[in-house]
Length: 170
Ligand SMILES: [Zn+2]
Image 1 (tube, helix red, strand yellow):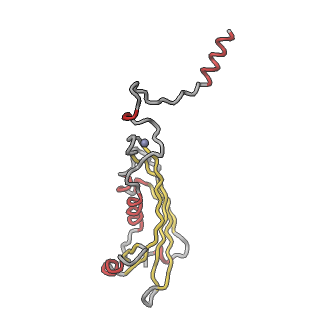
Image 2 (cartoon, helix red, strand yellow):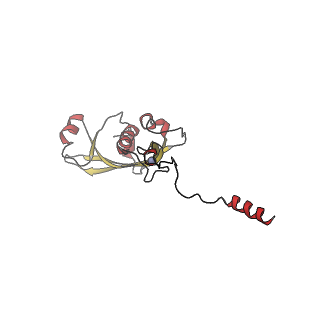
Image 3 (tube, protein in one colour):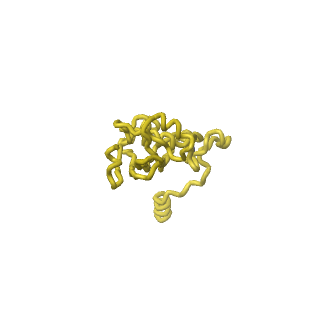
């Protein structure tokens, strides 16, 4: 039984993104403080056999800077994982039962790597096409003939307004 499964309390952790190499490759820019907050909780449940099955609930949240596929600008994208797993004894059992099981199956190995499973899950949770809900700039294709990038009326700068008032008084 993995050590975490013997604990009644959930195991929580904060893993720096740079320690999840494959996931870090998806992130744009250097943000050394980006991290994944996660919680793993094991639960024993009656199984098909005489022994209880070990179940694992894995939850994680992080935020990655991805490339918006509409404007090609950086877009902060929250990524979350909330997944149940059931441990099985061997790869053969996992293959045989996988189609019928709603939960994901994991093979109970002495070298079971919780963070690798978590990283796989986060990679699968990434959006296929990252995109801003509303892009911060108008894409060049849709810009007017004038080439204006921002057609929105500019807010007056309060300092400029004050300076104008001051000038008219003098
Ligand atoms: Zn965008």
